[in-house]
Amino acid sequence: MLTLTTVDYALIAGYFVAVFLVGFLSARRKSSDAADFLLGGRTLTLPLFVMTLVSTWYGGILGVGEFSYLYGISNWVVQGLPYYIFAILFAFLLARRIRASNLITIPDKLQQSYGRPAALAGAAFTFILTTPAPYILMLAVLLQLVTGWSLFVCILLGTIASTVYLALGGFRADVYTDVVEFLLMFAGFAVLLPFAFMRFGGIDFLVSNLPPLHLTWHGGNSIQFILVWFFIALWTLVDPSFHQRCYAARTPEVARNGILLSVVFWFIFDAMTATAGLYARAALPNLDQPMMAYPMLAEITLPSGWKAMFVIGMLATIMSSLNTLTFVSATTIGRDIVWRLREEADEAHVQRYTQWGLLLTAVLAIVLCVIIPSVIQLWYTIGTVVIPGLLVPVISSYFDQLRMKPRIVIWVMLAGWATSLLWLIAGWMQAFGSTEHYPMGIEPMFPGVLVSLFGWWLSKRWLQGLDKSSPDDST
Image 1 (cartoon, one colour):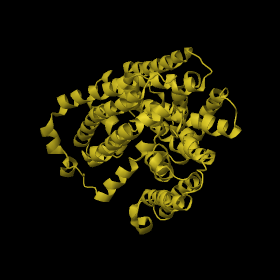
Image 2 (image 1 turned 30 degrees about the horizontal axis):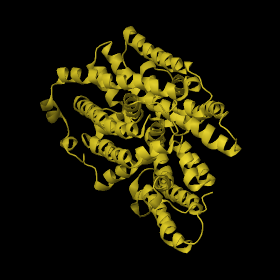
Image 3 (image 1 turned 90 degrees about the horizontal axis):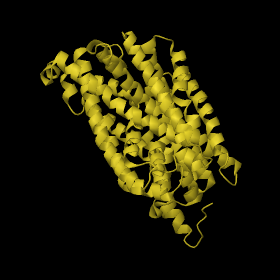
Image 4 (image 1 turned 30 degrees about the vertical axis):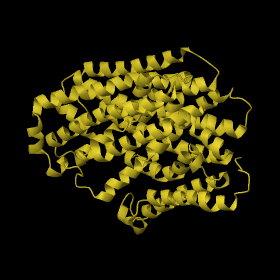
């Protein structure tokens, strides 16, 4: 537990009050239009787009601290570089197309391109992909470190604190709280690093006290290990929050340029977090829990008041992602599943369905946190299983020349998902997350993606050859 003073607690409480105020005040503008509640009326300007995307895509701050503590600057190679690459590809290949489509969600695009069954399957995968459970768990761990309360109580409080205003404010509540959290996440590490420098020194201290491998690009990890993380970064291309913000951008140019600017801010923030991780390892070489690298560095480095500012920065980093994933998950339930299954003529009830979706999302996330109380296991399982089912169908839906035959898409989605799932289960039967225990020593995501690509090739080469004279069955 962190050593905090009354001033620290007052500042942390003030942060939560500020987030509530911003979230609830954003709900003053009411509209029955689904696009207004779910996308803020498609009015995101470039500054808002950048601040909400940067903060949303960086929620795993405790995991970043753990990786930096264990492997040094290779954290940037594994957790930074792959995401920059795929974000830049997203900006140039997908962002303008997504905004120009004028749709609302990924399942909307799947239905437009491949029909209702593909949309419903995509909605199910999207719901799993956007579960906020890992971020609720991280927030609860941090709250427990601050308060000393039980983990379950912190899970409940963290869930309520980060979602209640979304029911009224919708997308606007998510965006405007993200703006506050964007500023605070940078401020938190901007506070920590100067104090660490003044107490321990600069590069000479780090070189003298770090294991030599911490200053190498690979950190002692194998090429296969690093390659796996590049594949996990494919998550970027099918991430619903990326798509949601592109749909909500004022123009296609805002969507493209906003992502490119976001990469610059991610690079800056990664430089700050990587440096903090190096200081943590050099100053605290024997931590029992590497996930606590940043909080423990703050504990020995920062005085009262400043320590609270750093804690607030970490809280803001986590809550910005938690808000967005909770809202996207609720949207998936309310609009992409319930509304689509009911086949209603208009979207008058979408807001109400989404509000009920918020409750269901929160309950299911709490259950997941209790059943799988590990952020790494949650991330690994979700990404490994879901990405192979979504990646090829979603990307191909935006390019006429890549589009598959609609009747095979649902099978491609299910085959990619099932292959990775079965491969994962085979590994679980031996030892969780250990590559050597998977069939042929291959990570489950690889065969899942290969099966999806084979299904795409089959649709493009064989089936289209057979059906050249047939009309396109797009429903």
